[in-house]
Length: 315
Image (cartoon, rainbow, N blue to C red):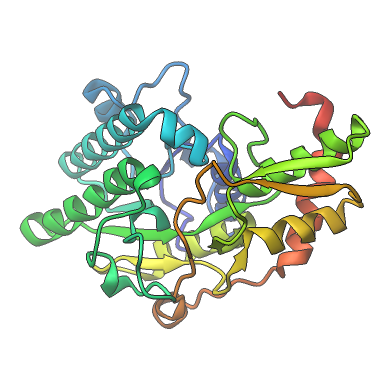
């Protein structure tokens, strides 16, 4: 029997980008399709207590991926919604899971919870050494409070909640909506549109000097599955690829892979976001054997290919 063989698993956000890969990962490692519960947003509002108590009934493991958020533009325009939705969903779902005697609660946290000027690479013990970057703070802090909740519940009730700090993810099936997408799908779409319109210039936000770390979504799903199987502790754990690239270098790389030959211009009136992002990922390898396997260029090629093949169906 595998770890997942006899377990009923609730995957919130299971129909989303990361969720679909997580479900595939669980099925490959012994979970049964009929034992995975995926609440749909159309009929399950996790901001409501009644929805939370209903979905955790007879569940062994909760994997909480449901989220309200997006890129810098979305988070800057919707700080209140972002904070309330994520806090309300997580707090109530965890409490409902505790009351229902769920065996384990796996929380997908975010690198946005780290201080704006955290030392590179970000170490888990540095999480409380400052305030997050302003445009992402409501999102990052809403998730951070769920870490506090899980630690408090472990201390008082012996509740097995774990908190994973993910970097920006990318891959096939990502969100390519220009109003809410993160940087990699936004750049892919920007260059594709410029090529279609035969424009010789693409204008990007910021200075290009900020750095980011990116994790291929299938690797992220594997890291979450391994943590669920093998980790039981109060401390948050970073899940990433352990490298950083400037946005300027990222744009140049995607332009090269897409054969975009026009000019790349920078609108410096728009924000860069956090100056640098890169995780220390050593604990994930030590605690549950996770290490990213997909090379960055390989992952970008797969993402670009998926976008080109599915572009007509996207918004």
